[in-house]
Length: 201
Image 1 (tube, helix red, strand yellow):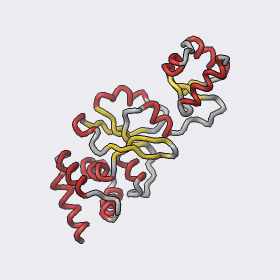
Image 2: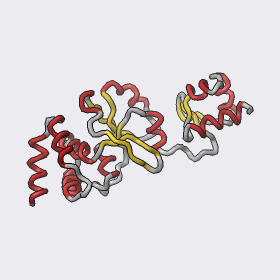
Image 3: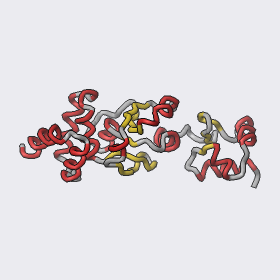
Image 4: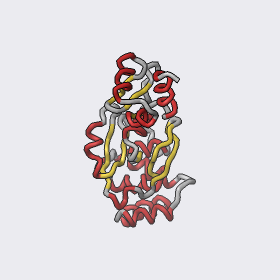
């Protein structure tokens, strides 16, 4: 197989975006990657990330998966995902570990609102779900609701109220998890005071 076809295969096997290390693992050297870029066989999206030129530009979801693999979809983006908000966010809300601030600063390909989360609760309520055909990490309904209380001051009142009401009416809610997460995030009283009114109202 010639280098061109080989490089194209690497990108296709990686779902449309390949890293320099993917090419190296496939036996294509750095200088060959650079040469293929010059020839227009592959296209550099950003440093170390490539796609096929005839490709429609990679979707936000694909970019998130490649550029921020440790990120978890949260708050506004998660609310929209679960149908708890009609407001389609202009930027992606993504939870990242506090250690990832340098990585986040370098992200220019997608509009991003980063939430820096402390280590002990970073993975709390983390699940994976389908976002336009791409499997991404996202906080579950209960963690998303707890985050609404945690970031209450950052959220529009209407978004917050709609979210808590939509959660209360959701058949898929898990109140045991909500109570557990709220305790771990030290939000128990706040969350339960509001939810008891809604659930018993």
